[in-house]
Every structure is written in C-alpha cells, then in structure tokens.
Amino acid sequence: MVRLIEHAWEEVLKPLLFRPSRVQVAALCCKRTSTGLDVLMVTSRGTGRWIIPKGWPIRGKDGKQSALQEAWEEAGVRTGHASAEPIGTFSYEKELKSGLPVAVETFVYAIDDVELSESYPEAHQRRRKWVKASDAANMVREPGLQSILRQL
Image 1 (cartoon, rainbow, N blue to C red):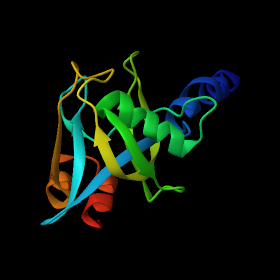
Image 2: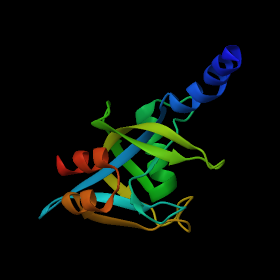
Image 3: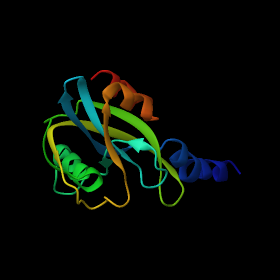
Image 4: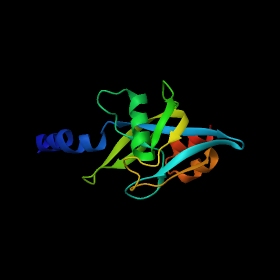
C-alpha cells in the first residue's frame, strides 16, 4: 500500500503540484506624447480582456526577436526598436487548450519608435488602442504587469 501511495505521489500528484513555469515573451510597445507615455494594448482572443502582445518563444529567435514577432502578429507593429534585455517579468496562470492551467513566467521587452500597419495577421481577432501607461495598469489583471506599467 505504501508503495502505491509513493508511486501516486511521484507520478501523478507531485508533477501536478510542482510544475515548473513555462516561459513567454511580451512586447511593451510605447510612444511618447505631449502628456506622457502611451502603451499599446490589445485584446486577448479568448476573453477579450486587455493585455500586451505576448506569446511563446519562437524557435530560432531570441527573446527580443520573439517579442517583436508577437507585436507584429497581435498588434500590427511593423517597425520598432526593442530593448536588448527584458525590462521586467511577471507571472500568471494560463489555461491551455486542454483546459489545464500552467504557470507562466513572462519576460517583457520594451519597444519604442513603433509604427503600426492596418493589415496584420490577427487584425480581425483583436482590438488595439493606445492608452496612458497609468490607465493600462488598471486594465490588466496580472499584478506583476500592473507594477511594470506603473513604473513607466
């Protein structure tokens, strides 16, 4: 009986309870205005809540390049200069297509000098808008991302 419990712990319960975080990259697209700093927000495809463009790292690209690719696909950012290193990280729980939640650590890259295209891969699946950084912090759910936005 003890052996059965040990097996259940090692093979089923422990992997569920102590899953390592998966990694995503995010693009924090910014522009200076006469009233301060604006941030480009997009809606998620599933729930329609406001987020910044983010996704899984892309094979063959580093974090900065992957963040720029996500900014293009989700928000139509055709040009911009990304920070060489992440400006911060935040954690959240993502629900996979299977319905299972997974812990995700997201590395945020700042992108400035942004130019937008009207036509981009997810244009018909998302909305986008520029908002003040302080307002953006109130639009997102993730406390870590709220903190990054409030520090801008």
